[in-house]
Amino acid sequence: MKFRITEEVNESNKSHVNQKLYEYNLKHFPEDLRGRYREVNFFLLDEDGKVRGGILGEVCWNWLEIHTLMIDEDLRGLGYGTKLLKAMEQIAIESECDFIKVDTLSFQALDFYQNNGYTVYGTLDNVGREFKHFYLKKDI
Image (cartoon, rainbow, N blue to C red):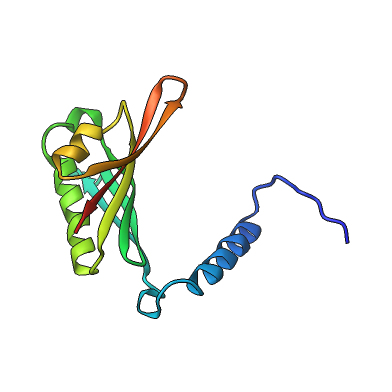
């Protein structure tokens, strides 16, 4: 049998690979955590309904993972990021998560997360040749 490796944008193939990994992972997680997955997204809208920020994440097994937190630059420092983060943390509490994890780059929001109780558990140097990548978590 011959195999080949191909690079292509193919949603069906991508879905297949993700599904197979999910099925494999299910065999290794306790039964009470199986099926615990859902996307969680909150958006900051202005009075015209325009998106000015948001936080995107997911509950996965016993944690909540934040993938993206963004506030328009002219609104930063006004507390909206904290409000979005607190909304996400409330979902983690209601979902009985054990912790929240997030990552950020050195020029992004490290201080913000640390000021909100997140601690660094890992780093990568030389990201973009000059930055550091921080991995943080907060126990619930």
